[in-house]
Image (cartoon, rainbow, N blue to C red; front, side, top):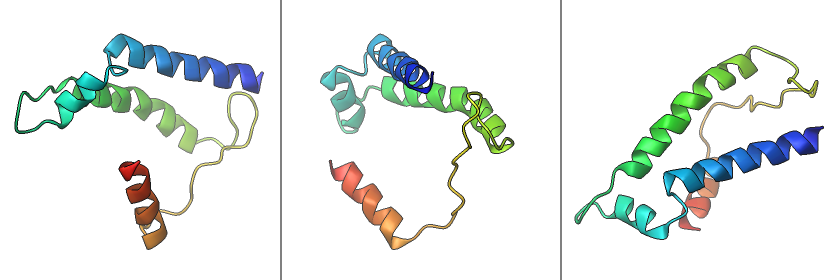
Length: 94
């Protein structure tokens, strides 16, 4: 059941990207082109994703087990360190 749920979540995420047009590289480049014809649609997709995720994350933080009875594994560490920043930079560079 967990694999099916993971597959469904990934499929939903992918469909969201397809429907919003975020699989088109020109959309992403248009968002990053601040000096030219800037396209804010990627920012709107991000705001929509954050707004959609707030309630489930709030709910998850208050629980010890998931809907599929797996233990919640949320990060306990809250401070920034060099390892986190370095990993973020490496991920961002691609």
